[in-house]
Image (cartoon, one colour):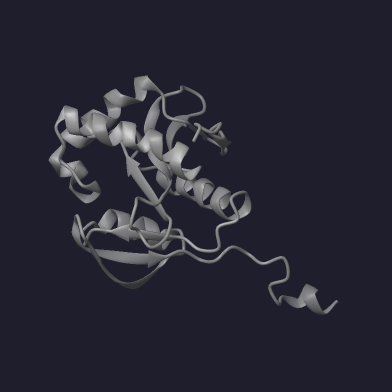
Length: 183
């Protein structure tokens, strides 16, 4: 086992980079805020947040993928996290996201999650992705739908209880049956 080089992704406004020690502060603040973190397994005290943060970094070593820190390309401000993860026992990889206060609005999470999803399909070669969302997390449902995901089924998460599984559109095939296929 070794920690792979975490790829850096860039969009028009954002840089998605590997987690750094300085990112723990915003992560801990997010998990301490019950109103914000309830849809991501929180709230967590600082010690529990540290365990989640280091587990997230270790996920890169164990699976070869994980959560990126989302930063503003211009200022470097930390805006949230997004990425692909698949904890032990989960049936498939999941696309997840968390917006920190500075990352809310302006389409930041959609831009970041789309970049992560494109990387999963185009570089990692994953055939499918889902997003598991807690019932009542209307903002995450809206984002999933904005990304083209559709509700597929309920999932009984052994740790968190009922979750809604949203299925993301499959990656575009080289020959998807469009008119150019008949040229």
